[in-house]
Length: 254
Image (cartoon, rainbow, N blue to C red; front, side, top):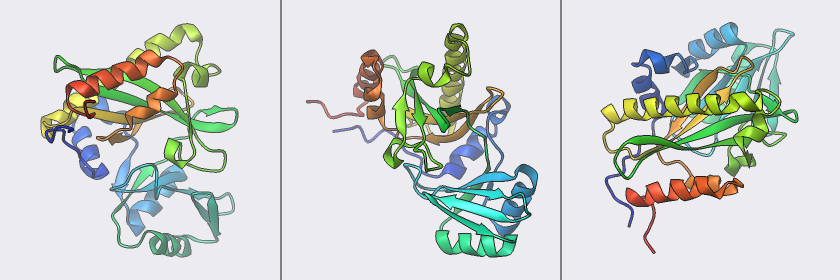
């Protein structure tokens, strides 16, 4: 059986608050606030596009993209459905009806890089090694479904290799240095979270890359799906993820 010592942290707000205490990590976190009438309006005025997401949730379920429109109105998209409004208050009222009393966050929207006109982001897997050190063990791209705002595999996203997605954005010769940068960032995030949550053994970091190639931490998952790495042609990545997971009790022993 998997070890009960593996700690899970479900609140996105709690994890974000811990990471913001480290300045080197905070520089990679888009402005995030608890959702309210005032916080959403202020962030839309500042950024024009934001994401509204549940504090507790997985697989991109419940994530909503909210934007201002050129005519002074507003629109939001949830799943494939888009609704438009002439003014802010009716839009916010509709949004609240959709999400109910659940705690939601509002996060600055990052305009993701695209591959064949579809948005993509990255998942960075970070695990405790058999010797007990944090190590980034895999990076995989997630290409969004054409009609959706989220990239998650369980919501129709397509897993793809980092190099294939970044081919038109970053020269091949520069890609190893960039992946090393992402790996080091992932390991810093893991070490920071472990100071507050000592039972962590693995994390999956969702990273957006903007048009200036700045990496942004969108979310940290403390129960990441390891099997997405089976979609890579390089089978050695999943083998390593699985081997490390076996060492700390993530998988059942056959």
